[in-house]
Amino acid sequence: MEILYLLIPLSVVLVFLIGVIFWWSLRSGQFDDLEGPAYRVVMDDDRPAVDEKAPESSQHPERRDGDMPG
Image (cartoon, rainbow, N blue to C red):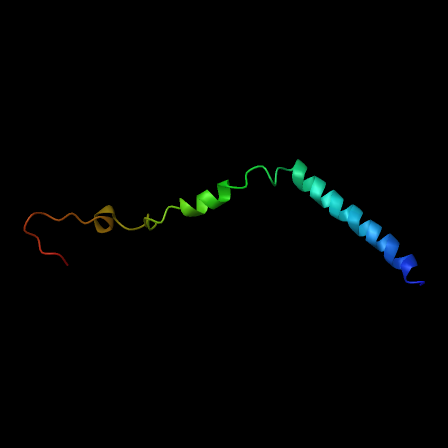
C-alpha cells in the first residue's frame, strides 16, 4: 500500500512530461506534413553522382556512327 505514495506522483509527473513533449511537437510543426517525406523517398534522384575531378570526356564518351562499343 505504501508503494502507491510513490507510484501515483510518479505517474502524474510522467503524464505531465508526455503532455509537454506532445505540446512541443505540435507547436514545432512535427505533424504539419505527414505525406511529404514519403513522397520524397519515392521521388528520390537515383542517377549516379558526377565525379567533378574526372575530365568531361571520360564522363560522357561520345560515339560516332560506326564506332564499336567497348
